[in-house]
Image (cartoon, rainbow, N blue to C red; front, side, top):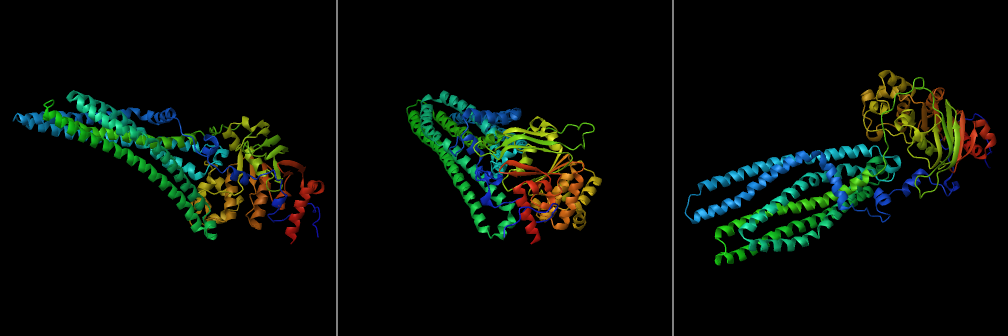
Length: 637
């Protein structure tokens, strides 16, 4: 027998199905927010930086150096000091072959060598000490670079627009702050100094070699240039492999965040092996590209080592011939060979600098793409106008259209309504009708595609964002609770709340009995995402947190869906009481909540199809009558 088309006015119930319609009856052009998130579940590299190729674009070398210098610039004075110490150490090293040449000459002439030995010992001790100090300065500065870059990135990521965060996996964003910034420490200090000091040392060594024997210098440079040119070809491979490895590290974080974010569901579903396999796959991918990067780095290092060794053999052969022909002395050949061995260190530093640059450029590219994501300008709320501190806010939608992305269908199609203040306005309708999106637009989590969202008669886009949100208390659909203590969660939106304010809100939200049962009261740790609390307790914490803010506008998105009948009734009365002084907007699937509203807005397929009281809508709107009748029958059964 078909259900009756309407119910008696004032019917109440507690079944959570009110306002829900079977999936098959939904408008096929509509997508729920969750479905759109699946559509948008790709990294920002794909949507913003790769032109649709699915691979992130590499930054031009000029831009990479510009970004590196931006991180390096605040520390350039300290880095210059570290570089000076490094150069002094290098200079003491360069003096040693000259001293050794003099030592060999004195041995040949049977002269005293004690002063030369003392000089060599002094050069060795001084050079080691100075280079150690320089190395410490640079390492300390490198850590400061990482700290500054992390601070900057954290400040930016926590100001990202909601729409930006929904386009990228949280684990990937976390890896930008942790893993990618770590790679900056070498390239912004050691790499810069190694390139600078290494280049100067190589030039100085080559000049000294030229004075000793130009022929042997030509042999040395010929071998190094030949092998070094081949080595340069592998450098871009290091950067590519490193970037892919860093992306895989982000996937590991994402996979772990997904698993721990629904740990009980994972256990209950027996999905440990499957999720372990997913994390291991990401870890293996990171390993694969890490090994690939290490392979190319090994090629670069071994190639330059090979070049020096071949140069040594070539110089030894050619130099021996020149000594035999008396073109140079044995002392000169020994000194030249010493310089050649000494050349290993600055050349290695140059290779290391280039290698670190390739690794760092991969990290820079990922950090820059994070920095390009849109953020919100957020200042401290301005002092509220006298007399308006507790005045209820007025809300109106004026022909609002909205879509989550340009390529996705509209979620709102010309939505218009006015909310009386104070009072309670309930939004009802099938899933995917756009009810929760109303709240997102009021909070300016998203910008309307067309039309205007008005608060107190002013477009929300003209409000200072901090002032707008300071006037609003918002309870999300899943009532999130943060890791930490119960007190920290309650005062999260009102850090200046007094103990009297806390006691009052605990009673109103029926949390006082819970606090008395907890071992440490308000200072009890609630676990990751409130795992130590029940669903209803988490919902009451979220409501208490919003009430403690003393808002002018209260947004409740199915805020009592997980409460038992007794607590729901009590909190429903609290909301009714609050609505006498505050403007309350409620997304509700329970008829017991809806019937208390001063106004009901019926939404379907992104449009407002009717507004009115419960009695008016039961009589006038078929969809509302159908939803109310379904609720009534479910409750009666």
